[in-house]
Image (cartoon, rainbow, N blue to C red):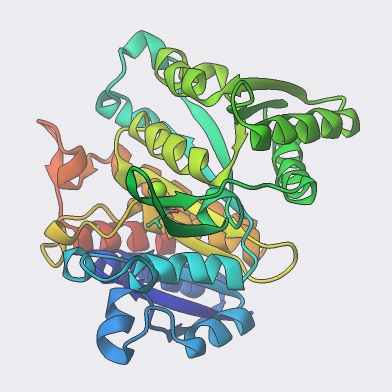
Length: 359
Ligand code: IPM
Ligand code: MG
């Protein structure tokens, strides 16, 4: 089959990690008889430099028509002094909103081969960690009313956390469906002891539970959830939470998998295009050094194959290739320990692609 993939390499390590994901996709193409056509698009800092705008309209148009979007990362020091509404990050938020990507899926899986890289004591992770953070991505404080005003204490700035019943229901349904297909446990994370928006969140999640009698729903306050993730990560199956809490907890969850460089993500809309990117950022200090771990991006490409293109066997092949490369002892610098073979970004991409082709 033929597929059109919109590719946004972005800034920092973005281009080099996306190149490795493309190698994996091309290997899938060769092994399974698909043709992937890539259209490279600008967004973020690179787009600011080239066009003056972080998110050119052309980029949004092409993404909307694509079968899926593959993205590296955006942002860097170079653009840090721009006003908030012109920063590279606005491209990411703009794309999420324009494409209706309300559901962000971030699986945190501790690969057996990387057990040693997990900063938690071995007895806390024995038997493995396999949890998914489902983060609401187009609402809440990221997109609420914001502004600046004068007060007796000087200038004040505000960002409003707001959620409608419909928004909570929509993300809740994604999370319940996912829990149903996995361990049948859903933890909804909020701050309902303080925030009205969280009380609404909790009420809607609780009423949704009636449609999912086979899924066990529990609620945690976000401070407690942050603590429980470190204390006993194996208690979690699916976590559903708001945009900002999900941003924070997914970084925390990624760390227990050994490296931020291992966590992929999928951002899904109701029926349209999906966008796939590593959960980490653009790491400007590592750009161009061939040191970045591309596995989160390669694993994001696997999610692209599974969710947007419905190519399950192909997705499994990419994930198995990543596992095989780890099992054979290859490690990028972030994961390297004594006795393992240290490899760069590009070489690890070649190794993964070769194993995909081999099958
Ligand atoms: C993420 C990132 C983004 C976010 C930034 C870069 C805007 O941290 O995808 O987790 O906060 O959503
Ligand atoms: Mg983040």
